[in-house]
Image (cartoon, rainbow, N blue to C red):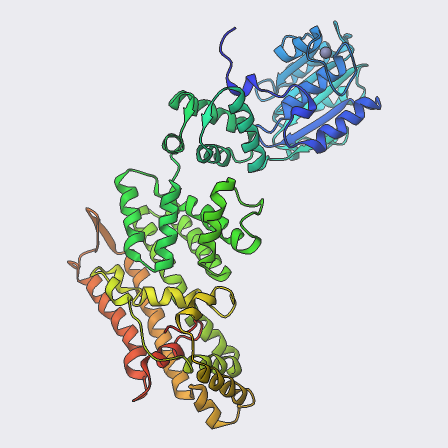
Length: 558
Ligand SMILES: [Zn+2]
């Protein structure tokens, strides 16, 4: 026998074999058992989810010598003929290429005669929504007064395009897209029967790329076997399908958590060098960020995540690095970047800008929160957080200064490392703040002082002394506002500048400024940071105390 591709060889032969469509197969089995089979069905759903296969199984079930039965034997002549596609009583028509009235008239002639060798004639109309209006009307007449023992099954990916009169005369079953787990499970089963050794990572890639279509998954498996032979490693499948390696996504997450623009831009550089599609990387990053967000909110075991069991612990660990708010923000930035990549001419620059925004996103967040607090006029929250911070022990640790590389990118996150700890422990995420607290364990005396200060701060709206104790005054507020505006202006300029940059080799240079544009930005950025740092600090005030006060959304730094 000639070679059969995997998808055809392992086509389901009984209702129970059909993956993931129990709501349909259950109803059909009952209808057969109770002799209540309708004369017209619409099977709708995405490609490769089992519509035509279900129609053929229905034909077998009705015509099996041991039937009609919900479990056709698969051994009688009728079952064999239908499976091989040679039965005279099962008529399969591709409505996409036979969409005219003449073909439907022919079909009407064909169904007027009794079945040749079976109990029922089954007409399977593939892509039924492609029929012309006239053809639909011609078919309608037949559906209205169907000849005895003829059953129509209309398979379609767009049921809404079928005319209403046909829809109202048929039973409609919607076939759903398969889940990652269902596809992966079936792949595993078939790989075993075919004696294929397939790495779990490779299987996950195929199951994910199939996007709910089992047939697509099996075609990809076929392709992978042709490329790799009977042993299918993860790395080669990714190569074959152009999928971004997992470690690149891990590297991106690491870069964000460390606030390292260097590492993030290095990724883009590597991809460019390897000739990878940057938009594809962005999409994969979006998918990964979604997985992290779900791992964070619903737990890493959630079915909503498309990942194999052995990938989940890593996801859970990465998700713990960020708060829900952070992940949501990253997600939005990546979506925006994807949009930019699609519409704008220079993908590399926009991807780089997108990644820089990711690195900076968390840094901006506390400022946004402060602004919101100021706008909503909630002094209680401001003064309370101020108290907590003012009670923190002194001693600034700035490992960040060492990591500042002399590139324009490194100038943007001025204190990446120190902040990466602080910013992920926003007031909304109590459990993440644990590591930050571990950095600075206050002495018992300080804790007491903190409690006292907080108690006095609550009724302190009109109490000047308490406000002072809370460490924030009206002029501080005004100055912090000014500093925020300077920061936002700086970032605005940065994005503005990005559209005026060009690429020279691997280097980004501003157009027509001989490199000075970036330098100007660098210094502008420094100034903006110093704006908070230099002008505002009271003489004699502990710098650490000040840092924390100026960064109300974050937790203590030192
Ligand atoms: Zn049979």
